[in-house]
Length: 91
Image 1 (cartoon, one colour):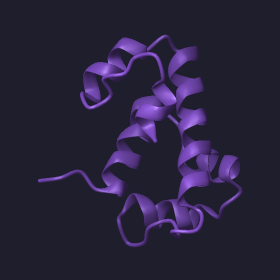
Image 2: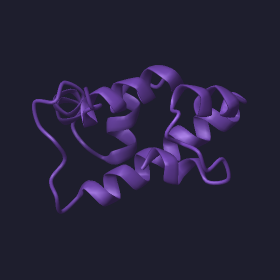
Image 3: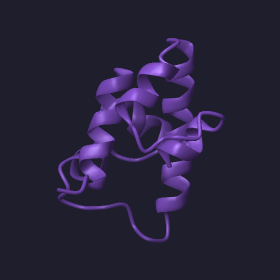
Image 4: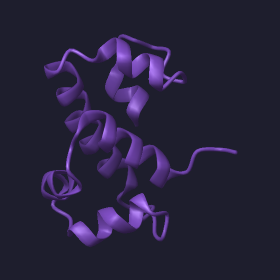
C-alpha cells in the first residue's frame, strides 16, 4: 500500500519529535490544517504545496541534523537515497 501524504507527514513529525503546533507555527498555518493533513482529511492546496513542503523540509532537516539522526533518517526513509540533500528527500 502506498504511503499517503498524511502518513509520511506523521512519520516525519514523530521521527523528529516535532509537535504539530511547531510545524503549524513555522508554516504560519492553523493547527487544524496540520491535523487534517496528517489524517488525510485534506491536503495542502495545489497552489501552496510546494512552499509548504519546502518550509517543512527545512524544519525537519534542521531538527534531524541538530539531533545527529541523519543515518537513522536514511534507514527509516529508504527512498531517501541521496544523502547529500536531505531536504530534497523530504520534499
